[in-house]
Each structure stands twice: as structure tokens, then as C-alpha cells.
Amino acid sequence: MFQRILVANRGEIALRVIRAAHDLGIEVVAVYSEADRGAPYLQFADEAVCIGPAASAQSYLNIPAIIAAAEITNVEAIHPGYGFLAENAHFAEVCRACDLTFIGPSPEVIDSCGDKSKAKTTARNAGVPVVPGSDGAVADADEGARVAEEVGYPVMIKAAAGGGGRGMRKADSPEVFHACFHQAQQEAMGAFNDDKVYIEKFVVNPRHVEVQILAGADGKVVALGERDCSIQRRHQKLIEESPCPVTTPEISKRMGEAAIAFAKAAGYVNAGTVEFLLDEKGDFYFIELNARIQVEHCVTEAVTGIDLVQWQIRIAAGENLDFTQDDVKITGHAIEFRINAENPERNFAPCPGRIDELFLPGGPGVRVDSHIAAGYTIPRHYDSMVAKLIVHGRDRADALRIAKRALRETRVNGPGLATTIPLHLRILEQPDFIAGNTDTGFLEKFLDS
Image (cartoon, rainbow, N blue to C red; front, side):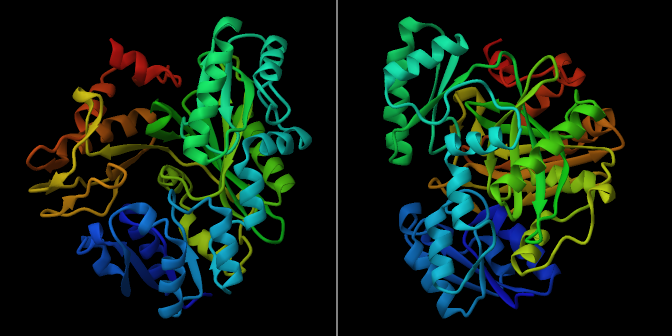
């Protein structure tokens, strides 16, 4: 096992890694930007090193600075968290070249899974259902239009090199296809420096459902149930839950088997998430594999009792899984609410600023993952998420009751601050959400109404 690791991230996920490592008896070095100097969570690291100015490009994305911090603090491995460099194959390769273990999959697997068109080919070859569409990136708009005619409109035009809704356009007819194609290309080039795009059939009213996997170097892969991430705005998730409210045991089993098949075909090792679209008939289609820990990993931990971040570290240190698929039991229902410093009444405008009043909820069935404290100033330079509220109940109805109580208890107040808490409470009153009748368009329709 490692003696000392570095976490190349900030905020909530940095603290999460620190806690998991300390539980394993491992020392942790934290890195921070000038904007995060004095952040409360840094005091829990064994050592902290400043790696640059506030701008991410000069700090949390600055590979030479992170490697230098790792070398001067004598760490053996680097945990990338999520976001920033977590799925950067070049960073993983640099770690390997510097004799530092990257706590995640290999650079080759990150590269192959990060290209969505390559990942679709891997899925298809493994017998995993994929959304009908192009076989990889298309050469130009004319080829894309021919594919769209074959699979039928509407279609999605998607960046091959990225995600998060960037480089993505929906084309409803041949008349608008070329314009949407070029818009997607331009956005993909700006976001990922790669303008390759591919074409997919648009699945009507789908749910976004993902399967958490753990894969050891010995080839053993287990699926840890599914998460429903359909409550999202502009492809950014807001509420996640496990298990999915509408999956049957048979669908869950098939989806888990498909996730395992893909992971084995890709040669995947460590924790990862295989994402699917689930349609109204119960059919599901592969979207992508996220080669990192997910923000919403906590709901899987709640229903399985398995510490995913610890297992990331243990697998990277050479340990094999000490449990099998038959050992995985899903208990109860868990829901995660992302508490963002945003104002939903002003088109979700970010609200950085000082926190004067902070009260985080507790009691049975409540977990809060957060890095903030009273007196902390939320910086304007990074993601607006300041906390994750995770509730776990006997069943979904019980989890919803706990969620209402916990959200009502939560206070994150300061001059000009607004959060997504009031929006979460309103969603909890919606009959369709209560009944589990949601899809990826739920939040947009709710906000429009």
C-alpha cells in the first residue's frame, strides 16, 4: 500500500480523497491555487503546496507544477479526483514517465474511452447495445447527413472528444442539419481542440442511467448497481439516485452485464462509470464510459456500503477485489442533491461570495460531502458546487421524506449568495418527481412551467 499520495484537485473531492486515504493509513499532500489559499479543507491534509494563480490553466491544469509538487513532497501516487486532469491521458502518461502511480486507468484506456466514437466501436464489438448512428466520426457534413437519413430524424450531432453537453446539437430535419453540424464542430473545436463529430439517433424521452463498476488488474469486474441521473440542466446533473426508480431486476441485471462486458473489452482497470440511455420501453443504449470517480458516487456507496475512493487507491496499489458480484447487495434507496452557489431565478447565475451563516444537516440517513465553512469565500474561478447532500432511506419514499427534512435544515447564507436548495425543495413537491416519472427533459419543462 502507498505511504503518501497527492490529490491533484480541490474542494469537496480533494477532502473526500483525503478522508479515504487517511482511513487507509496513507498521508496526503494537497495542492492549491492562490484563490484556494486558506481554504478550510487544506488543514486536513498532511502537507499543502501552492501550485499557481487562481486560473485553472495555471494551477489545477498545470501538469509541470503538479508533478513538481509531487516530486518535492516524495509522494508515490497521484489521485486526480474528477474534472480538471482526471481524464487527461497525457497527464496519466506523464505520471507514469515520472514513476508516479496514476490512481485511475491507464493512459491508453483513458484515450480509447475518451473518444466517444472509439468507445462506441468497442461497445458494439462487445455486444453492448448502442444508439443507431455513424460508425465513428464522420468525414464531413454531407456524410453526416447521409447517416442521419439512414437512422431517421431527429438526430444528435456530438463531439467525439468530449462531453458535458459541449459540441452537441440536435437536428430535427434535413433542412437544419448542416447548420447544426457546423455549430457542433465549432463548439467542439473550441472546447476540445478537436472538431470531429459523430451522429446518433435521438432517443425520445430517455432517462440517463449509469452503472458503477470496479475493475481489478486480475480481470475481475463487478457492477455496483445503477444510478438515475436524469434530473439535469443543459447536460449538467443536479439530482442523482440509486437505484433507478423504474428499472426492474431484469433490466438492472442486463445493464450491469453490459457495463461489465464493455469494461472487459476496453481493458479497464480501476473505478469507472458506464453510461446508458434508457428508453420508455426498457431498452438501453451505451453512451460512454467515464474513466474516473463521479460526483454522484456517494449514492452508490450508500446503497452498497462499498467505499469507492478507497477501492480506487487499493486497486492502483495492486490489490485485487476481495468480493464478487454475488456479494454486492443493494440496500434501500439513496438520493444526492447538488447544492450549487447559483441563483435558479436568474438563469442559474453563479453566486460567489462570503458565507456568513452555515448549518449543515444531520441525523439518520443523512450524509453531507462539503469543503466549506462559515467565513469561507466561495471563489468565482471554479465550479459552483459547494456541497452534496446524500440521503439514504429504507425505500424511495423514505428517502424523499428524509431529503425534505435535511434540505429545510440546511443554511448557506451570505451577502448576495443564492443556492439551489429552494429549487430542490420545489422539485420534491412535484407529483411526477415523487412518482419517479422523469426523463432528461424533466427539469427544463419544470423550469419553463
